Image (cartoon, rainbow, N blue to C red; front, side, top):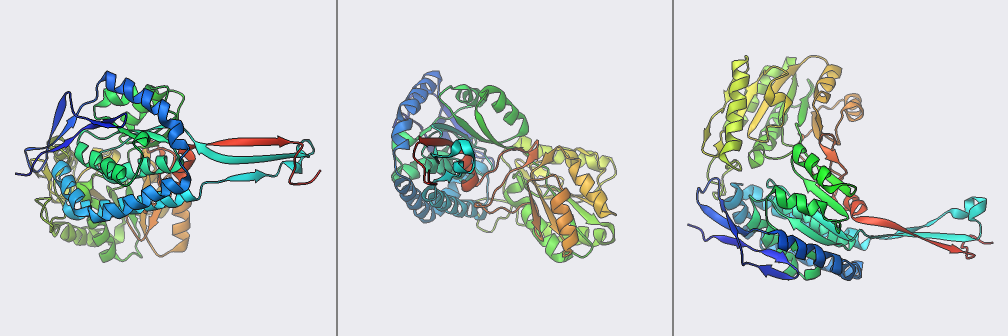
Length: 481
């Protein structure tokens, strides 16, 4: 049995271990794999006061100094990638290959954050183009927002923490971090790595807890900006608790991928199988709905089912495993329940539909009714629905009926269809000749409708984590008198 990882709170420059601890039982291991020290009301008060006091200290760090820390952290992550992947496997049931992939992305994210820190600047505004501006010079620069709050989810706890904390530090902020209860040790370990890399203790604090802690931190008047990734309902609660603060919300999804008649069916089936069940489908852009042109529907379903059956399911610590466990048994049961509901309404389950504890068998549901729960709601699990379509415009409209709009995929070589889909689909991003489940960490990522507000990736996040400050010089003009 692996030793139990302990994740303390990091408050006011010190790791705090005294107090109440909460145990995390690994969903595949079935035993306690980590413990988190729970933050209480006094901890919140201390953290708030410290963040307010130290915000200016962090803001005075030069962008070059911030970038150097982030670049060192990127190097350290690669050196310790396997260590983190094992921790993610234990806490979340995430296969080692997925955990290694996530940590590679963490390193990339820190490196991109460093580059963005070095690019911070401002503008000389063209004020002399108007008569009242003649004789005046106006300058701007992007200043730190002050105190940021990062609330991270369980499905990619390391990389999404890297995005939020990395971008916030690159901007010159101090950051309060509330990690997911399901991955406290992985989250605390990544903060510890940043501190080893040279991040000043004034720049970050970590508080473990439940939704009540999150609400208290969201309402804290010291917090200037909140970056949250999670479900739509929780996102709405964050917004209510926050009040008039700047918010970046990356919420749920119900991602659709369209396979046109000119697509390479073998390629489309292979990619959808790989990206529909990675991390057991626990991704907001995981392939959930695949719409296939009716003339290729049976061919796709057969090829796709064969690909899905070839996935290796089991121990996340086995390097050969493709699909490990879901985050808990309730999540796995949701896959089973929604599959049974669709089957009862006429759908064909070509594989899966069962679970063993928290391990949901990769499931394919062919031809469910359009109003089935697994079509309309976010399953966030190892389940993909495949539906036929006849008309391209109609399938675009069907995709848009979802209350979510995060990202979509399209397999086609027809440039007119590609441009039409890019224009008409109500999503934040479209992946062509790939599934919905593809992301580059230096490219803007985010959704519309119930999928959130704002865009993630360091360059765009720095806009949320900074404020524009303007300087007006009267009687001094670079434009002449």
